[in-house]
Length: 85
Image (cartoon, rainbow, N blue to C red; front, side):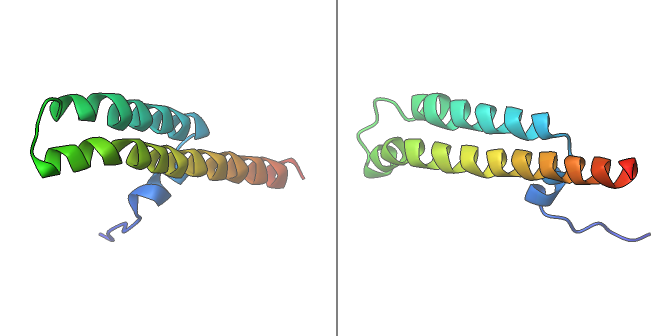
């Protein structure tokens, strides 16, 4: 039994493109709007740092998943073009 050691990014690329798009939107909404709610009202330095960092992290996660969605769509288009010829 061989073990498949693909990264999470590679696994998302192998899924349909719309799953990557959903992950992109979902991760952005979760990290940008829901995670700061867990840290709201805190005066601790770590709490303030997390609250300030979430917009940046949300954008980066959305960008990564959107990239995986685009690469997945390209992969499907290439496979379709090969099968048509």
